[in-house]
Length: 342
Image (cartoon, rainbow, N blue to C red; front, side, top):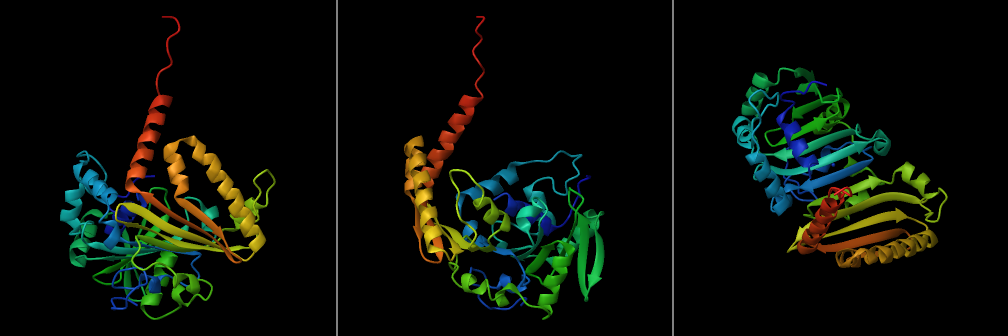
């Protein structure tokens, strides 16, 4: 499919995010930022995720990503809307290192079966100059069309696979993008119609437990396919039939990554059996070398009557060592075979 030259500033931001898931009020969100972005995700979302860029942009990997974007120069005949990162900043007035604050993702339906084309919507809090961005869209977004939904302008286009996408500016600091029907539902919520995921009785108890200010936090329905996979035969059969929800967070503080993942499953016997099996896998993994042994040693699993909990603490130094080992192994696998005729 022919690439779209300028799907939208939001599209560029989404692409940046994927390389790593009440409007304008002062209500504090549970996961960082000035606006509770979850109040704009529809209630029937199968999963939600919040990325807190107040935290993420402090991390080395994010700054490295932006630095690499700055160094990259597109060819003059490229169809891409921006020649390089500075061109993006100049045209949009947005610098990811200071203007992007938080992003909420909502996934709908059976997103696991959807593969690379899930039904989704994104709401982002960004400092932006809407007039400047609209001028850029008019000048370069020739494959975009504009439509109106309940008095709100929506921009429509297609991604590289030919699937319809849309976006809209909710305010000077809020924007939304995703499948057109879901973007319309975000607009409904902004106008006081419908219910958000914050009214979802099944998810709200877990949303309330999310760690405030974490780099990333999430709540997902447990996928039906995984429940079925756990029932299949074999030596590592696990009973996932009672699994209901996955929720947790990933964060970074000091010089280490830390996080927690809970699987809600109201079957104490099955939970204990699963933790015993997973701890056995940890023991086998530890034999792969000192770095892997240190990694699995920093992963803890516990079982309770209604859940399984995984927690981890992994230092930046250990991640660096693991990356070096992986690189060495990849290089060893690509070494040419010796010429036996010599």
